[in-house]
Length: 293
Length: 301
Image (cartoon, rainbow over all chains, first blue to last red; front, side):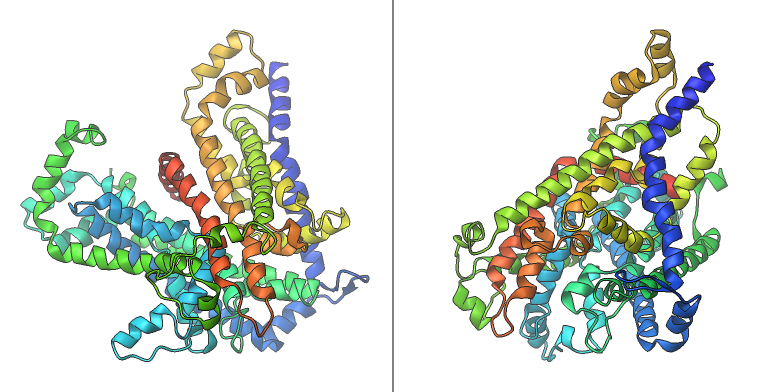
């Protein structure tokens, strides 16, 4: 009796999530599969086309392949670069520097700027006569028109993402503080220098948090939208077009609801594959203390 | 050593140990690097302030400098009025964010508590679904959700941006569940012996104890909705309904081809967009650090 009452209360308490799951997730997912198999402008009746959208995307749409390649490129460069810089800065801050709190705040500050504002700022920073090119000019380098040249637009977006590397720094720094000091003392006694200590103690101890950042970073990078939409609209010549802006345009500019839904499922497939690969390889390099104990 | 570690936060003892172990490693080189990196990272922020304080002439001539040369503080009041409806954008942001935060906080606490404490058939299977849904990118449901809200006549209202939050999300449910699991279950048992029902236990015993995790969830939700661009871009067409994040972008994209956007006022908008985030971070960082680290590593392990 009490058991049944408890179960009833469970379902009552959990009902917001259950209802939300059905109405905003499960239902839409099923609908999305169906829509992706149709040709539909959302105004007239949908027309069943089977796998046509997928076939067309994969065999007959050069822009899709370009967007896919650009997304890979962006994720493959910006995520590791952000992690390496984050780790490097965290390690610097973890040494006994004075004013550590001040430096930490200054490094973290860019992370607090909302993406829309970041995009506005970088529109000006990356302008042909902006401060970045001025700085390059000091070294006698003529800076490119970052956002207007197809060769430079991806590096420009990566630069913008690296500006926020301080987010990883703070997390890594907090984790570094949790590394038992005895490990370093023992290493010191054994004659290990700072570099050796960094690679043999700090990095292995941080691998779980590095792994977490890697997964989150990859998922985030594959879904990059606001920066691209605001700064370049995917141009020039689709050189900065990525998966989500492409999807957005197909759905809300051209009303190709079926085609756009198919893109969303391919995006899901890509994220899934990369997450699985990351988890598979994690066994080889992610170090958990519990395994040793 | 163990005692030194346990008093790590307030004590001076660790400071001195740290100095012994590490003192020789902080070189002038580290300082130089940190100063250069911090300066480079802050240049864009100084540049924003400089542009925000520029005159309209400077905007038209596009002759900005990194360090402010002119100080047109009136730009900060000009945006509130007829020239730009920034007060409207701000109010919209507040309405949408407050609704979203209220929704997530109210629902996540209940659902997370249920998953942590109450026993029911099918619960474990449901929890596996909760975890699994975290992997699904929101783009999958974006189009059907848009069509659903269009059917309901909710397009161009705040509702699509607020209402889904009242049904909680998987990550927040997970956070609350982890938090409750760490609390001793004797608390609920004692309350039950005292005659409290399940809702009474939640309302009177659990809710006060959940404050830290609910504050963290509130902060996460606030940051996500305050800066959200895509949601409002999909659902809102009227300028008078746009939140600041969309409004600021809207101003730059609608100015005439021959006429430069009012960059000084746009940057004032960007500053207004950023300041609350700095404030929230400053006031809420201790909750965030607790949640980030424990939640984060728990998620990976």
